Length: 85
Image 1 (spheres, rainbow, N blue to C red):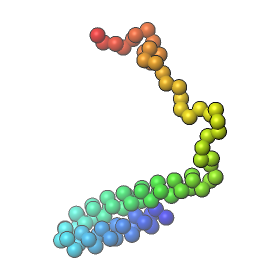
Image 2: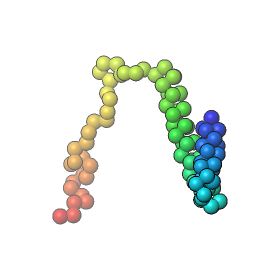
Image 3: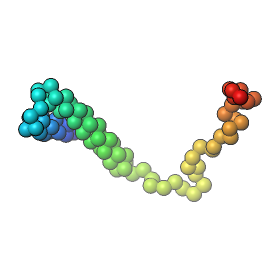
Image 4: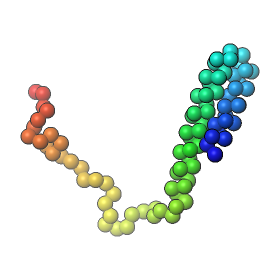
């Protein structure tokens, strides 16, 4: 589906480029950029809708951890190593 949307957008960009009077290289390059951009955008939207439709819970049950515990700076660099003072 994302390929079809990208090809359609590529065609529209090519027509617009020709109407604007761009040379063939500019028309091709802009069409390719539009193809990639639209394809990736549609693919991400389809992936989000599939995740939403799988019936995943919308909220976590009470008592469930939502994030990893934060680390203190002393735990990130054991023994104060790496401090260039």
